[in-house]
Length: 303
Ligand SMILES: *[C@@H]1O[C@H](CO)[C@@H](O)[C@H](O)[C@H]1NC(C)=O
Ligand SMILES: *[C@@H]1O[C@H](CO)[C@@H](O)[C@H](O)[C@H]1NC(C)=O
Ligand SMILES: *[C@@H]1O[C@H](CO)[C@@H](O)[C@H](O)[C@H]1NC(C)=O
Ligand SMILES: *[C@@H]1O[C@H](CO)[C@@H](O)[C@H](O)[C@H]1NC(C)=O
Image 1 (cartoon, helix red, strand yellow):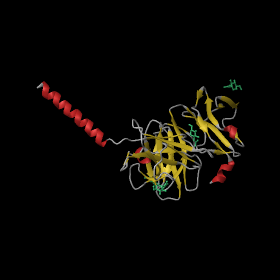
Image 2 (cartoon, rainbow, N blue to C red):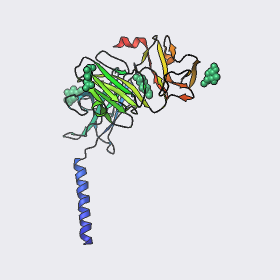
Image 3 (tube, rainbow, N blue to C red):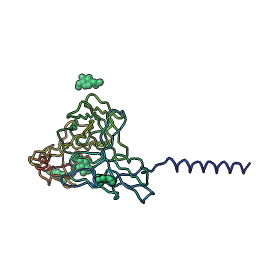
Image 4 (cartoon, helix red, strand yellow):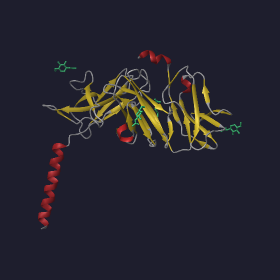
């Protein structure tokens, strides 16, 4: 009896080893050197196959949104110079200016046996561009968790989906957390969802925005899109409970920059030195801080 049980266990163990040995293709992990693009800098992709190091060739792909499926799906297009695979497990992309998604896989042997594809990994651009753009209403980075927020896609397409990436979660789309009406995604009361949001059409990715959902009583009002050098900027502060704030103090990088009777802070002509983290205080309460991006005027000439 004891002997039979032992044999059964052994069989199960053997079967398990066989099963996983045959069908568990490794899935590589793609990493990117930066999450947000800035003009002129390159992006390095690296592809890691866990526990299996030797003899791989690496294949690099651009993710192209496939809207014909309901779920998150992409088709993959080989990147230049990667059709025969690269011996190096890193790949440098120069001159990328728009939001893009990348995927890798590895292969080895004759005939070639491939790993699974990695998860897509995104590199985001905050700059609006003509083929696809995302706007947010109300137009601000911070929202109260009870706010309803609309995300609208614009550009040369009749069909859109709105994607988001939360830092502790996988990639999801509006159909999972909001309601798509035409090219607008309406999301109500789920803004504990701090992350990056963007639009996808069959061929294009839009600019991406940071949005944060706050349980705090006070939020900073700052624009979701980068501000262009030389343009004016207005920052505000909003309370969950009070309609009018009497005194508001503004900070940049934890340094007090305005403390007077005005409830808004206006910068008539923004320069690169205005980039940074901002927060506000009022009636003994403090907002979370958010990053403000300033883009150089000349970068728009590059498109
Ligand atoms: C891939 O290999 C083929 C044949 O070995 C060669 O003709 C071709 O130029 C290679 N392509 C690249 C992009 O290196
Ligand atoms: C989003 O936030 C990150 C830092 O958290 C910042 O580097 C990036 O520039 C922000 N993007 C935009 C479009 O403001
Ligand atoms: C969708 O948007 C249109 C136009 O903005 C509006 O008239 C319509 O009521 C909306 N539909 C739903 C289901 O919200
Ligand atoms: C702002 O200025 C008032 C006086 O005008 C002062 O009492 C207060 O402490 C200042 N607030 C901060 C945070 O420094």
